[in-house]
Amino acid sequence: MFTDRWNIKPGSGRFATDWERVLLIKKIIDRGYVKQLLFSTDICLKSLLHKYGGWGYDHVLTHIVPMLDEVGVASADIEQILIKNPAHWLDYDVC
Image (cartoon, rainbow, N blue to C red):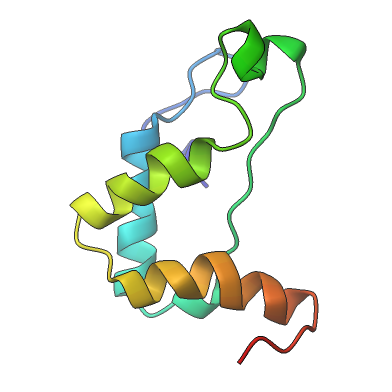
């Protein structure tokens, strides 16, 4: 999804930045797909944990959510993505 937007070649070691991802998420939301978004994070190495200097499991909540707010994503949309969409995906009624 990101590789075609920023000329990222597979295997190059270049990843989309958080800011680039947030801007793309904003575009996706603006096009009406907020109910189809799920967020995740990838902690696959010990070095990615806070204890070893990494972003940690809370990266989405502590860094990405404030960035979404900064670019104008409505709090209702953030709630949709973080609470309602996962509940729907898990078929759990939170409403």
